[in-house]
Image (cartoon, rainbow, N blue to C red; front, side):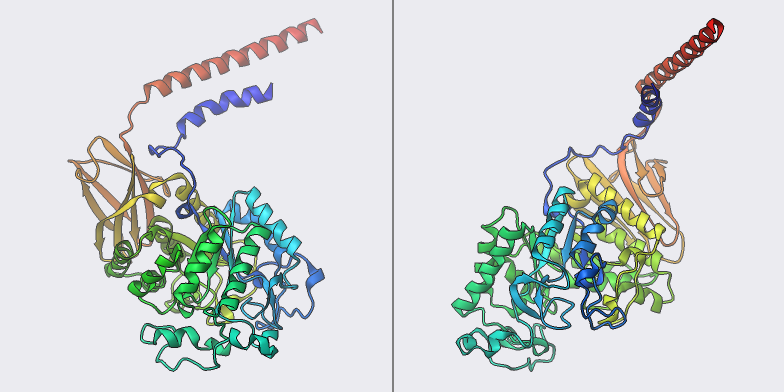
Length: 520
């Protein structure tokens, strides 16, 4: 009886709060729809103390105890924030103190500090049950400094001659391609992928992990330090093992045209370092300047890449000081800076990648400070904001699949439109120190429409065929363009009938109760 009563009460509210925007019907999920949470396995959560040997949480260069079970325990936490995929640092067996995963000792074993292969499979399986994808960092450029192959005469041709890059900037476009591909970066043994045996070993390992664990994608480290021919063979091989397998390349130091050359190898997207620089510069503090750098970066991507929507957009990663530090150095509140920057990240083309600890505004300078052990303290305001952004990104196809049109860019305030099929979303970001306003004409929004705020609940209607949007300093609003609302006659009729039935039902219960008392 209580369930029936609850259902009667809920009906009008469900009608009232139905999503306002004429969102496109739910389509098959694509990689551009994902939101990725990037995790350094050793620094996330210690879920199993049985693998805690030579662990020292006070030493930032030692293992700190994070493992597969710890990540699995927090999948619900990540899912509730709207993350649809996780990206893990390398999980392969590493040499001593290789907490970061890049000193690989064996490509076919898991690092014992992180857990067993069985536990890794369980993590992937649990993620898939939650409809979350798993991306694994798969470095093929080098191995650990003391790898057994170095002492094996039969493996001499598996490595390039030991030498460092002599160019001005390692990895930059002013270094000769041959030198870049053969040098020992950070003095780590550089693999000769052009050697058929070496290349085949790495490709077979890549295929094995897909078939053995069912991971959904690879992050490919140091792409520009490895020959293109190898990447062509690698991409073709691993994609033949699983449909819609995603490859994300890391190419720090290259300009867009140089990066674009690698997309013909079969790598789907690349970490967008150019955008990252603009994001950190603009959102690190309030600005009275135009977002020109961000606009140009986005336009460059659109013209340069076959699939700009598959680029990995980010503010933090394991190799740079955290964005929180940048905000703090500018004497800014990190939470406010993060809200503005993440709003841009979630509502512009690309796949957002959020580094672990962002949701609690973790601080940290250069390596290893930026890789500190995760602290699961409550930062409800920022967590709630990230959650809301995640919800909107999943509900609004225009934010992941729509085109983008810039409507206003002046004195730190940006307004842009995302459109997809019959859905139009307008995003307003005020990154300045003052309240600002902007007017949109009927060429943008027709007079029989209105703007419904989905973050703060603002409602903007036409006045003299213009829509005046007023936004406070350091604020964001995401508007859905919808038909102008008035008296919803069908809704009012239904609501009236529901409440009439509800009153009749209550009277019926009261009378029945009264008769029972009289009989007693």
